[in-house]
Amino acid sequence: MLYWALIFFVLALIAGLFGFGGIAAASASIAQILFFIFLVVFVISLIAHLITGRRPPTV
Image (cartoon, rainbow, N blue to C red):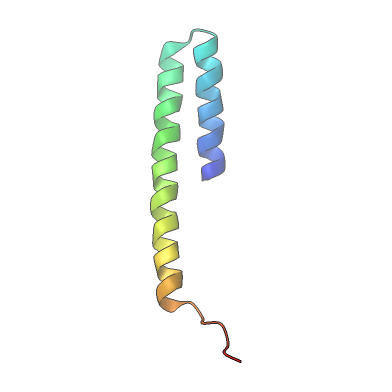
């Protein structure tokens, strides 16, 4: 998901460079939404790992 956010971000930069404002704004919005979805999924998986993860063996 982070990969797709980066692709839409690069697409927005290229579209903005060539003067396509509408496409640049849409691509930037999609990239931002995908990035925030990635952050939410990452935090949920981090919390799930902390709750149910294995502890290192004690020696």
